[in-house]
Length: 120
Image (cartoon, rainbow, N blue to C red; front, side, top):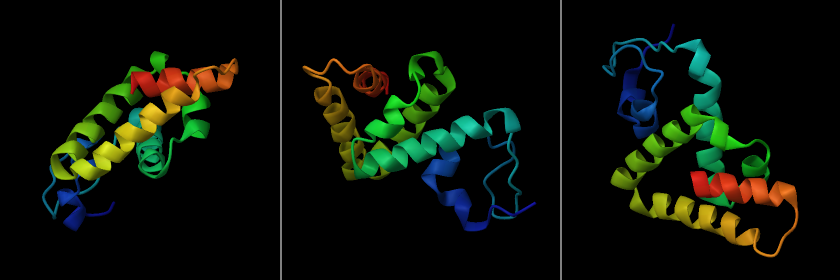
């Protein structure tokens, strides 16, 4: 096990629904394994959306059926909106870019990515 230490102040960790214990520096990390994959997938997607429209990640799977990823993404976004509005605005812009990319495209992969962007 590893102690939380300074990571307990990180917004992304505080938004993580997988924490079982508290955020005190002397506390230990503890996750419910069932949700670990969704948490990591969401954080990767959010990180990619800070940089570009993440169409590859958005197109890989239909998120409409995965409420845990949608909910966790929303939690991460709201926390970032409160702490770093410019970063959250960048994510929002890249999501919108993903939607606009689908205009006039008959590609099912692009359509799935746009649908996921709308959902997020």
